Image (cartoon, rainbow, N blue to C red; front, side):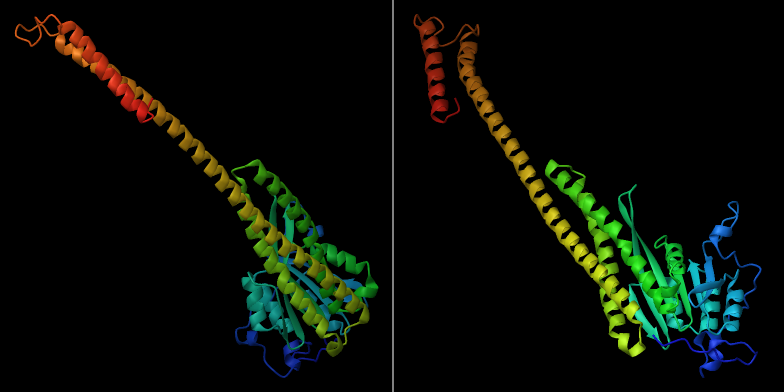
Length: 395
């Protein structure tokens, strides 16, 4: 990244960026209305009254630094622009959370930000990337945090504009906590004195460090899922699916970051990056590479667990179907026995019913062997049916 340069004087006596670089910013075609100091919310949430919280779409904090030390904390963006013009050797660090379009347009006008980068910052929902527009570096990061109460991973988006003498962060989401990054840098003036590059690397480090609790939480979730799978919990499939989707998003956050950091490292010599920052960036790159490998392992583990769960569910279903088939077979055998005995008992009932009818003209009614004949006929029919059913294994 180029070294800070002196701001040229504009026509109105100021030191705006567009006046001195020989070209007109794309945002000057539709200029934003002048930014009045009164409606802008307070600079720091720490100074705000508890009864009147600051608007979430506003400036979270803005500060000017010289030689690694904070020299002022302007209350509005307009004051920030004015004081930065008055301090050629200073650096502005402006933090925004869900900013309004008007605020972003005023920043684009003042710092000559590229329209495409500003459009991305307005719309959000961008994939992690690193783009260079002249002397301005535009970085999109995806931060993550683990929510213990719901056992979910919450993702936030962070856009960073890094110029020769300014750093602008646009945060969409609760993560990361950039106030801790600012405090850490202010406690290390030797590092902050290195300029906007140092701030960028500190932000990268905070984002990557924020992945560690997520990795720990996901590892715990996977261990619990494995227990639930072998315990036969029917709700585990949904939990596996939801965690797999989170890991896909986590992978989208970490995998591009590896290439982005390597691109920054490739420009060390070209942009004269300080050696201390080079070591700092290499350490961040090592951490994000390790995290990316862990996320890849989590996705593979969840895929394997889902396969095992499907196999166990199939085995359980097969066992249930086999038990049902065996129960059906046993039931059929009982029905066969009942049907066989019913048929055997029906034969003598039929003979006895016919010969029990009291009609005058009936064959064998006055025959002396009629009773033995009827009994013998019943016995022959019953024995015959018994032998037939026995041969067919119904009895």
